[in-house]
Length: 628
Image 1 (tube, rainbow, N blue to C red):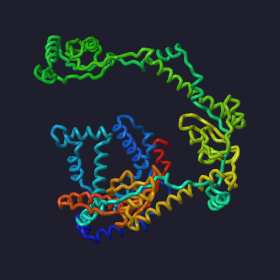
Image 2: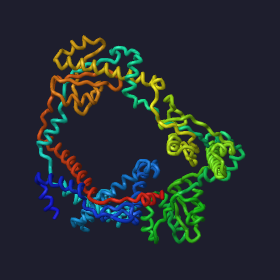
Image 3: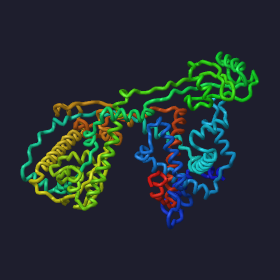
Image 4: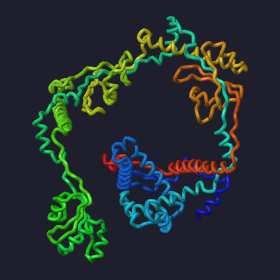
């Protein structure tokens, strides 16, 4: 069935047909209208659903994978801050939509296809033979925290979706002529002559007259509206302030050190090879051969010793399988071998590794101890202060009275706009440094107190809105300085446009560039070859783009964003793309085909998603993420 579908899509009409299908998805859709709740589903996509458990498991895999890739420098909090939870959900929605369409079309995946996929999977190949290995298969899945059943179910679903998508773009190669046109477009270059006029060449802008200022203010009065402003009283509970009051004595820190000494020490561990035998004579023979470097399994086979050698790894003396043998082993030096009489049998042993223990002295960890003590004490005091403060408010005190009862300072703040600036357009530090305070201030009604909130740096605050000053249109005298600056900026802009248009008119009239430069002191002329995708540092990107859309002899201008210079360029010549060998064209067409495939797949998936009713339950999503 799939082959027939692919063959039918090899004509140009197929592309149009696919476009109509996608359009129909968007306009009409095919999914059923769902009623009621989503049950245990985070998302329902048509007939398919993604349950809380499924989403939670895949989220955990996603986080664990990134944790391993970053060597522990990544956390679940980082993942959520980067929006990976929603990216994962979007991916699962797309997969569910593809699965639904696959089931509608009756596309299935055989066991043989899944087996072949697994056997061809590089991660499952034995590193020595390069062939599929059952052990490597199980180890790889275990490391990825997947069971064989989960992997095979995922593989079956992926293979089915690949079949569906391959029908969309298989058999639709881009024409070689299309590739040739694209390369000609991309590799075309242009030769331009550019005149640079420094901003200093503009005439000096005089102060505006009263009439000019009034006319300008009248025309642009909406730009000078005074925004709504809010005055507040705020109570800050700062960790930094409390930290200054905490100074533990050396005796206190030593007491903590003794109590937590295990945190700053490590017991010696050893690894050794151990072979149990019936008597001392055989044990000494085995120990001698171990000491000479012979393989333990070979020794046991040669001496017909039953069982297998025991490898004891990274073990403390008190946690060893046999404490009598361990006592002897822990007295030996690295790589030494010997015998010991265990509780049940004699044993030959060989030390394979020693990880010596240590105990950091108090002086070495004193700073860390003080830091930990201070941090914990700050937290305790902060929570006590907040509890007492909230208790005082619960008894009927307002925010200022509650602050006074706890020896906290209530600060009155002047009216500010929602960008953190006061009536003089000056930023107020407490708001710019703590955006959370500004957010809470503009979320409350007048005379309403906030709950205790936490800032980004770990401080806490509560505030009340004392006054809401509504936005209003000011008189000219109130904003004269701002209006004057705006008027001068407009006059400068007009002067720059006039000068640029004057130079452009000269260039368009075919006047020699050197003659134009001589008319404008301090200007300079440059000749450049522009590449469509490699910007020329001195020519603004927007101007460069314009120069690739005009004809020879035409010109365009722009303002350099870094220097403020006026830059006027005239197109002198179009340098066509060099001829491309057929072999290179075929290689480039292959890349072009991949881009076409991605575009077609993106369009199809977008239309397919639109064809189904998609319902999300944010409460269940939060539950799956552990936030519910």
